[in-house]
Length: 519
Image (cartoon, rainbow, N blue to C red; front, side):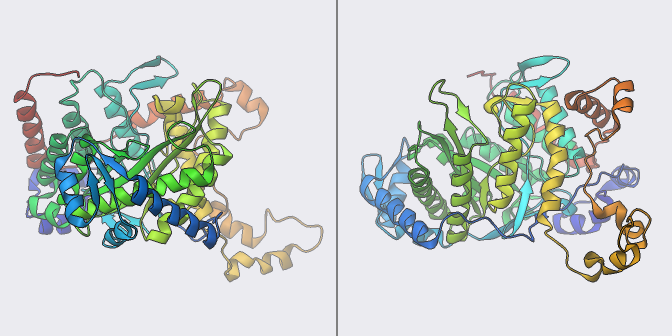
């Protein structure tokens, strides 16, 4: 698919002419296939009964009313809560039973995030699952160079890989932290990369409220100011400082985005045993209390602002203190939080390619497979970190990125469920073959074999002798080859040259307006 087919609609709604150069670029663009976001045809796995959900909700509201939450260094937030009917004492906000749930009612159950290529728009909520890459690691790893601090060149490479990945619907946000760019300026380079090197939807900056505003202004250049005013073009990750603390930086970014009708993920950051109780029920109670308060606050900023209930969940190894991933307890919490999100009528973010391994090895594969599958079954609507995560989130791995992105295809096919039409019943094939025969040559097999089974584009299915003759390569070696092939065949998606120039000029002017800061 290319952007060319969507150009008339885009130009009409955004009031921009593509120009001859843009139209020529679109006509010669290389087609990059991207699967549509997942639309589940399978049931969600529900681990809690209604009585358990009632207990968790009642306990969460008791926490909000009796213990409260802290909104720190944010006098305006405290005034908003006071005006809404909360009991505010210092920075502690106690929310009467029912108030947070009532405020949450204006949050939409589904919304569309628009991409600059309308063919890549995603609908978040309902039975849908949108897959986005790893977010936030300061380090990168590849087989050739090992582990090192990430650079803007690494960031741009990940954006290109994400654009080229069939099963990935979203370009993400901080796919790695480009440490060679000043802290106060790197968000500009990251946004520019997402906007120009991919045409998939992306995330904005949340590290300062001013950077959130920069994200809005860059989107107004890319999409048109009126379009941004009327549509959601960014999803933004707002982490709660668990337990039950809402800091001014995250809330400041939320305030900017909610006021502009841009979506926010309200996400408790839970390490069980450290930032939440060790029990599943206790953790779910705290998660729900934090989400209720966060979503309610977003609606105090702007009723109807799109929001996603988040739950980043891991446990802790009590010997080393390190986070653990792919565990049964994390699955229980992920399933339960999904039920709570559906009870509230909110889209749900959780799960990902989580692992604690230092390398893309067997540990990484087991933990990641557990984490991806629980996300599909839990009813997750937006899965951040769906590919590339390594070493507890400290590292973004190029090889693991393409390994995970390949396996996201299994989620698409699992979510289709089981077809029960006449062709799927295959009675004609069973009649044709009969007892003792085989199905390889029968008409039904010949008609269906190309699409009957999902097949990895990465794994080696060859006989031992062929595999050995080709160098006995393991999956990481195959992934290294695939990374290089994707980079070598990458072609930048077309963008109106005037818009590209305006974005570049904005970034250059913003950078020139302030001294470098690495703090």
